[in-house]
Length: 59
Image 1 (cartoon, rainbow, N blue to C red):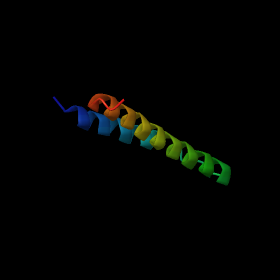
Image 2 (cartoon, rainbow, N blue to C red; image 1 turned 90 degrees about the horizontal axis):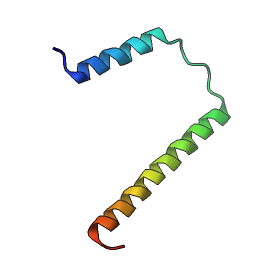
Image 3 (cartoon, rainbow, N blue to C red; image 1 turned 30 degrees about the horizontal axis):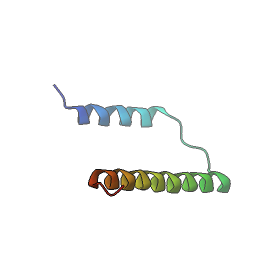
Image 4 (spheres, one colour; image 1 turned 60 degrees about the vertical axis):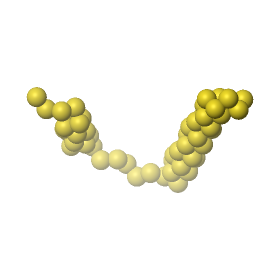
């Protein structure tokens, strides 16, 4: 029996081989992607901060 990580690796590799190549990314798409990543990371950090403060009884 193969482990879950090996199975996941095989699925990802097979999907990458089957899917066509990505099209060229325009400047607007790149800016939107970067903005989304930055906002997502900021939101996750904010939620972790609130969770840590509640856990320590500071709120």
